Length: 305
Image 1 (cartoon, rainbow, N blue to C red):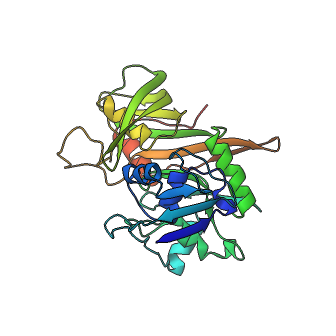
Image 2 (image 1 turned 90 degrees about the vertical axis):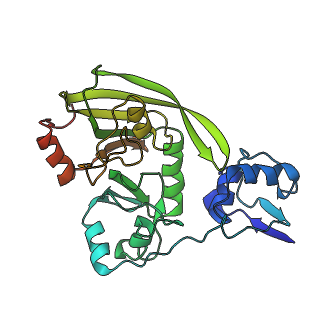
């Protein structure tokens, strides 16, 4: 059995393994590479590696592949109410012809998935702001992380913004409240972070610049500027120091969750980038729960210098 696909322009310059997960389903990386090695997946009739970039109008062929339901799962479609749409529209920081910038709330995924239902793409697809077009997600922000998030209004802007993020020309600043007192007031963290794709172990280099804004024996308020963009990078690096972020139920030192904050105290505070020699700077106000914990832990914040 053979299935053939033609790459559309939205997937230009995308890795083949990412395209497979996006278009075919949630397949373990190890299985994708096995199919590529065996020739069950070919690009323009040739065997390729998982890191191969694809181009618009490329031909992708799949031969005799049967995906089990446990491997490939359909995304859950979310149908937002008018109240949900309005509440998210109220979080918009900027709305121009090419993209919107909003202060994303904690607990909302960027895109729908096999586990996530409530998500920004489905919400804004029903918004009048995107009438006649559709929202394009151009970067990542964890479900439980709040703060600055950008969605493009057209394919051209989506490709441009995505490339800026990929080339690390977007400067991101996060704020986090972590347990305990960080010893050094500033510096950089360089770590080898481990993640798993199926049974495959993957080691990724991660680098973050940090600056402690306030601290005491109970907690530290820290400014974080990730240079790389690894999954859960900031959360993993603080966890590795033995000082996890408040509210992080995945990366925590103790299994005792009593008194653990309901919300993750990690906020995408500011984003900066340049388009056509025009500087764009967007700042997202801190959520009330973040400010309340600052007060409880006797930490002060008056903005970035």
